[in-house]
Length: 373
Image 1 (tube, rainbow, N blue to C red):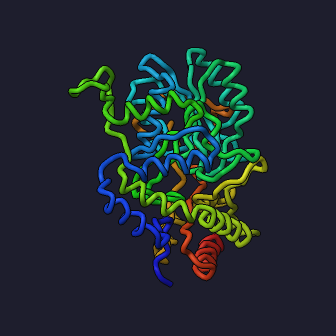
Image 2 (tube, one colour):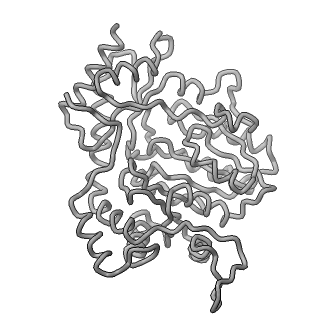
Image 3 (cartoon, rainbow, N blue to C red):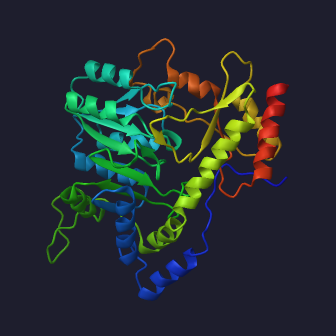
């Protein structure tokens, strides 16, 4: 069996055509018609009024936080089970971070823990949620709490392009939301992101900030701190070609999850639960070893590697990261945090859309062999 990767970039066959059109037009630098078209396409697909393409998903979150009004004196309450790119931009600004535990049903932000955090930190004015591996957080009660405690909601939908909550797309709930087009995402621009919002004036200002905040003057004049965060026309061209295959890619990701769930029935492992309130894009399929089973996900990762199968640990919770050791972490079960339990038992399995059924059956067989030893 050949090497089976976790998840890599795949071309549609149309990228060369789109990129050639960018070269032919002379638009190879940041900005250009492909950037405009990609922004329009994403806004329409998700159902928001406007979008601004950026050089990365991290840049998108940073600009969203700035536009939302986060300052160094603020407190931002964030998902704990996520990649560092969710919360690092909060520290770029210099604001305080408070992390919130997850629930066992979705592995996403726990609503009861969030309310506890809001009560403990009445100074908090912002809530930053991340949709884990494409699965939506339970947005209705989260938005109700934001309204009750007068907090602005910012949504990290980096992993959740095409995922839904009660029929509505992830990335449409926050005042500002961010999508990632990193190399291993559902679609890629080789590296890039997008800020989305119904606030047209806000997105206009985000575009201004992302192009070094250059004032409309005959010379280089700057009245605000700007950033070099715009996407290039070449990268946007790649993204437009990738987007023509979006529905097919999501369908393949979901099929991969279903095969794992069926194939691992009756074993000492199970798949990350899928919430009934929405549809995940199943960007990465994550396995958990059952409680009480004397098996380590790191040992499973090693065993898979010995069979030329790539896997990856579940995101290490932010409150466990050395850099964030001094940040507060709030859980309704402080003695037994759910995020620590998920991290101790979880592993992300190969979720590459080009993995065929035979290859996935082989992965499942290797996992079963490991669990039966």
